[in-house]
Length: 85
Image (cartoon, rainbow, N blue to C red; front, side, top):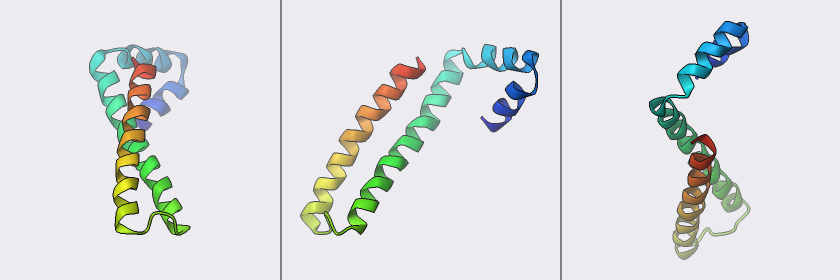
């Protein structure tokens, strides 16, 4: 992805090549997969920041927090898929 960014910023022809490459279904799937991993990591990181404030540190709170993280992540990942496709 960094290579594609560099190539697209290099010239107008490079941008056209990257745009043509990223319109394929396989490229969209790979981009969605990478974005999904980053989004889950972001949501889980927010959970850890909240836990650092002392919220949800019990066993029950941890289990509830895990379920909430999975639910929020699924919603955000589906929205990212709609945006990419």
